[in-house]
Length: 461
Image (cartoon, rainbow, N blue to C red):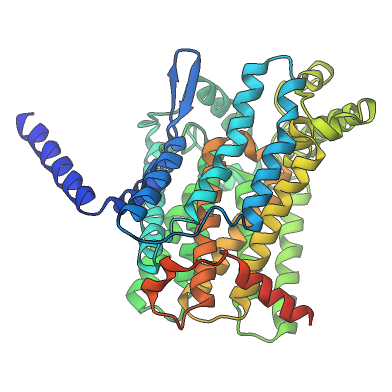
């Protein structure tokens, strides 16, 4: 015991010395904080430990200024900063229309905190080597989480963060899944993998982007055979873990992400690529839109979603004023037979925050991801492939997974997605100015996605 404590103290001492030597290394705590999900209760106030990522990026930004490195000026508000500012203004009235002001303020904070994290993260001025290291750390932690998830699935143990509600939900879900074709083929067990998360669904969302990256790397010709083999093994572990979560939306997001990535990166002719994509889309439609293979409970199928969507549309028709302000969730729960929130990101956001805030939310992601994809289409090399994989995965999570769940109700998941969006922002900047020496990237006074706007303008011309 004494030796263990001494070893831990020694390791912590070495880490503190390295941080003192270069405080900017704190940035590597971000993927670590996002690799597990834990909410600390401090009296009537609670905080998800992932929210500490905001503090970390603020400290790194200050460390860069202390070291004399120039960061992008926050005074010259770029389009993404302006969109976040307008989102904060448009979503604020929703607090005033809710009966539980304390809860409404908490939901408002959970919406804006991830965007503030992104705003600071892309203005730190990280270098190419730091972004590469962040990607590797995030993917390795996801792989370790997936390995733990497989152990959980086959042993039923080590579910340290899953609460009683998750255990009850797993018993319900696995019981029905065993009766389905998919559950029978998979050999569904009594325990779903959750890794270091509290629930299987958020865990599956966490795995999606690293899984897309590892799959892309497994077929990347620029890597050696050993590297491709290692990527294939990692893909197998992550995909197996995703299968055992029995999370249909996660499987659909992965399948569509790879289909779109094939369209972007394939060297085949356009006709061949669209033919392959069409065949894959047809297979997905047969698997997911017909009853049988993935259909095991009405709550998780179209019937359950339809009840929530119908109730929200009925509320909007009866109270069209909510389109301006939001803040009608209490009234929704009074008139809806479903006890859960609306399982649709667009409608959930409209009822919570109003239509203007919802449109700003979608505009923010649409513009940034469109610029990233535009730059990736005109670039080459491994970073181009990584940028495309990240942008496609985040886009599918927002627009496809968001069609089946209220994605922004989890501050952990939202910060995770905006972390990867920030990674895409840096990669896009590097690809645009790849002829400039790497250290000068931290000194750029340009907006992250000005390059994307130039490319889009050139295409329009």
